[in-house]
Amino acid sequence: MDVSPDMTGAREWRGETAAGPSAARARRQPDPIEMVKMKMRQLGLGHRDMMAYLGGSTGHVSDILNRRRPLTLRMIRRLHEGLGIPAEVLIREYPLCLSG
Image 1 (tube, rainbow, N blue to C red):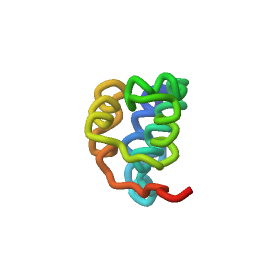
Image 2: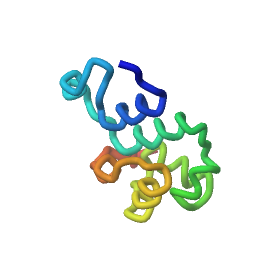
Image 3: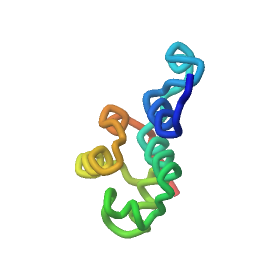
Image 4: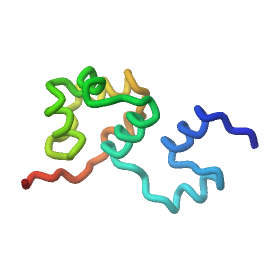
């Protein structure tokens, strides 16, 4: 099976692996922040680039990526429309680090 790099990324998003969908079900699905970070790595995006999707300053972006602030509905829409991250992934609940 010939898989282009774009298809590999798409399979990662859907939680599939080269071994097939059944192997994917055994794996844990990435939470919204893990998915955003994965997409950032794939596209070579930095904190400044993410300001367009997450708003605020680079410090604000860091707070979100370090789970000190939650994603808002507006951010979820921008990430979905701008980066193509599936909305069903972005709306999942994930733990926040509210201390320290």
